[in-house]
Image 1 (cartoon, rainbow, N blue to C red):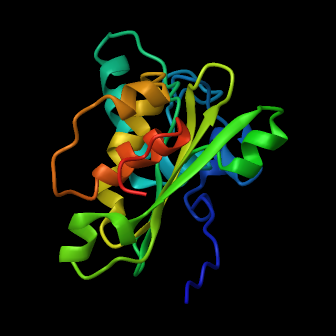
Image 2: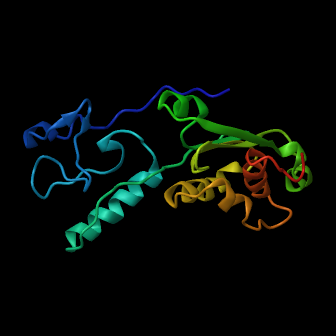
Image 3: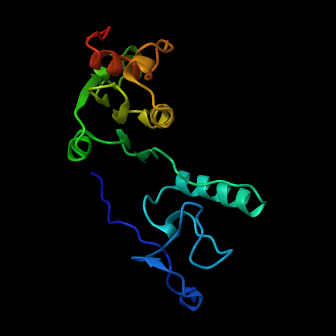
Length: 199
């Protein structure tokens, strides 16, 4: 069972209203450099709204430190992985099939079950899957989802493939170490292309 009661930016009790910053609901409004409506005042992480994820906050904080030191950067990630560290774990990166459809994209959706993955069998956790969502016209990957033991470790590969604009052929053609859960990533891509090896 997952109980998710939600979170909100902690903007109360800090006399923040004295700064008269522009707000976005209960969050502080920021631009692509995490700059607020007040010069030289930045906001990162949960204070700046969704997605409220530690890895987003860390990336924003790194960027703001570079900006303060005189470098030029902007925050425009293509994908930020969302992970539920439950049992089993869940990972969502990019668009789900429903989100892709709502965005007007004609997509191929393909799943590969861990029941057919050698490493999952050795871990005695064969339930779950890896799913890929890719554009039908050019095979560019727009989303990944996974459910299973240890799938949080796949989140980096998922996000990286979206950041790089990878196609199904790129993932399918990459040699994945055996036996690993990561092979299910390759198998999902191959299955989307019509030639999965183990199913």
